[in-house]
Length: 331
Ligand code: TYM
Image 1: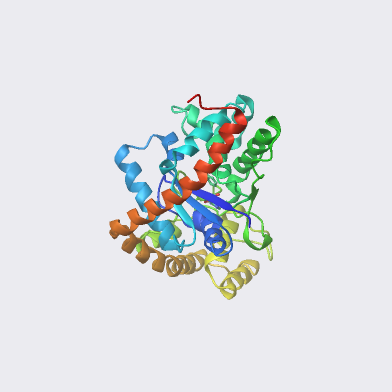
Image 2 (image 1 turned 90 degrees about the vertical axis):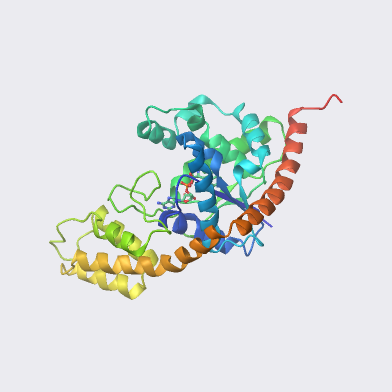
């Protein structure tokens, strides 16, 4: 049975991009596969969060995972830093990761642009830590959004390289996974600038209150409207339709599509509908997040149980890795 591993950085609240790009698939997959879903708190250190925020964010993301419908009785839900074997495998993989290939990754180049005053080595080796996360559980499938495609390709490279260097078949080569054979998903932001992201400031969080969602959606960038029948939608408008597609009923999408094609569309109406449909979708999740966050005892029980299961799996793999590399005990 193929094993599934995936994670989310604890940099901020889960947003619609995380949900439709990844978490939705986690929820499906937990019923059919051995699954490991974790909170990547070590990865979030590349942005230098203050210590109190780190803890609060991890707890928030844990509560949000569970509120979305990830079932800790089915999936192994854990916090990355609870499994120190991941950090050791990261160190070992770093010996076979080349500076040139790491510098060439788009996510590294993006980060250098976003945080030019904090280009730390953790940013450079981010894909190595991600590879360690995945292969420590010998994962076959990794449900992620389109933005993680390149990082996953690096994980495949590092797994393949390790197997080849030591002439073993220790690690399966992990594949990106999306449900029902569709393409990897990219949920756009509301500012017309590409993907919805935590660091982009263009995200709608699952925990946002209805009035916050309304405000964010009404502020979304549009243009002055179509001037020709059936004209192609520019990116900012297509983005709104992509969001409608994931949260609204098909007849609603068809209605606004028709209005656009006939040049009768009023973006204000579309945005109002979009905001209400997002609220309809997020409200039950938001209520569950609030319940989960209040239940310290439950959250710590889930984290403990997840840490134990994840460690058992990680310890077993790391033992094999050490043997393969030739790290032997003298006592
Ligand atoms: P992160 O925390 O940025 O995002 C978590 C998941 O959400 C997906 N995602 C999106 N999908 C579609 N459209 C969007 N706008 C969008 N924004 C985010 C991401 O693709 C991801 O699947 N490096 C990872 C975390 C990580 C990880 C791993 C993932 C660390 N180790 C091992 C998988 C396996 C990250 O920063 O994701």
